Length: 91
Image (spheres, rainbow, N blue to C red):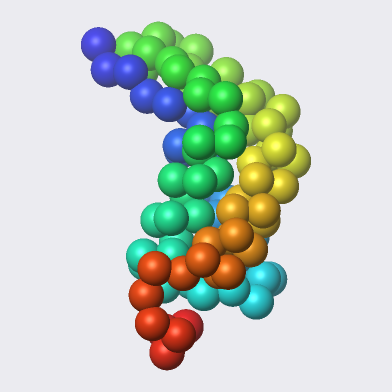
């Protein structure tokens, strides 16, 4: 049995699309900080990968939470951009 957090997968699936339209740093360090902050502000949704219905349920959850996910990524991106943990020359 393997446990996965749906929100982590959903954030990974949409983060690049959200960030491409924002004027924020997109380096690997900032991107990980944005993902961590986003996930800390979203409720975890765990599922068991051995279940046959997981794929369908994950797609339903993604649509249900997509607006919340995009909103949290956007907030986290602007916060991280203002509190970067690296030099200004990376973009």
